Amino acid sequence: MTPDELKAALGSGLLSFPVTHFDAEGAFAAANYRRHIEWLAGFGAPVLFAAGGTGEFFSLRPDEIPHVVQAAKQSAGGTAIVSGCGYGTQLAIEIAKSVEAAGADGILLLPHYLIEAPQQGLYEHVKAVASAVDLGIMLYNRGHAQYEIDTVARLCDECPNIIGFKDGAGNISKMRQLTAKMGERLTYLGGMPTAELFAEAYLGVGFTTYSSAVFNFVPALATRFYRAVRAGDKATCETILNKFFYPFMALRDRQKGYAVAAIKAGVRLVGFDAGPVRPPLEDLTAEEADILQRIIDVNT
Image (cartoon, rainbow, N blue to C red; front, side, top):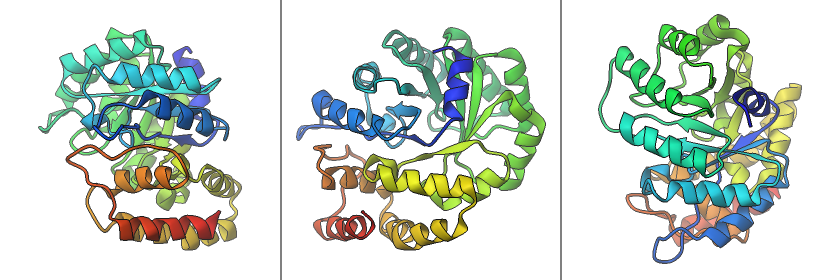
C-alpha cells in the first residue's frame, strides 16, 4: 500500500489496535492472535494497528514486532496493517525496516523512550525514521513526544511519506490550530485512551477518525457508536456512553495500566485466548472481570 493509499484508508472508517496474544509463559501466541485478527477484520475496520499501544508495544522485544505484524497480515484479508514503531532513533529505524520487510502497510511512530527532547531533536528523529523506509508514517503526539505545529509543517515539507497525525495529548485548541494549518495534507486520528469519550470533540475540530480499543471485544457496538458520532446522532451516542463507556471508564480507572489490561480481559471474556498482560502491567482481578462481563452482557 502506498502512503497515499494508506492515508485514504485511514480516513475511511473506524480504526482499532488489536491486543497482542501471549501464552501462559508470556510468549507470543501467533495462532490465537491470527484467529482474533481474522474476526476483527470481519467488522469493516479499514486499518488495524499491530503491536501498538494496546498491543503492548512497550513490552515486546524488537525482534518480536515483525512476527506480530506478519501474523496480522496473514489473517487480515484486505484490511491494512500498520505497525507500532518507537524507542531511540537507531532502534526505531531498525524496527521500521524490519516491519516493512514483514509486510506492514505503514508505521505509527510512538514516543521515543524516557527523556524529553527539544523540537529540533524530534524533527531530526522523525526525519531519520521516515527517510529510512517507503511506508506511510503517522506521528503519535503523546507524552514527551508532543509536536509543535511548525515542527509538523517542517516534517511534512521534508517527508512526503508522513501522512497522518494521531493525538493522545488532548489539547483541543492546539489540535484545531493543526488542522487549520495543515488541512488535507494529513489524516487526523483521535488517540486518547478510550477514544470514544472524546470522539465528538475531536471530530468537531477537524479530526478524520479515531482508534477504538474496545473494538477488540465489542466491535459491533464500537462501530454503532462511530456511525452515530459521524451522523450527529447525539441520542444514540449518549445512550451508549451512559450504558457502556462510562461504566467501562470507571473500571478502567481503578488501576494504572487498565487501559490495556481491561481491553485484554474483554477479549478473553468474548472467547479469545489472549493470555495475560506482560509486566509491568497487571491483569484485572476476578471481581473486576465479573464487572466487565456484566457491562458486556448489558450492551450486547
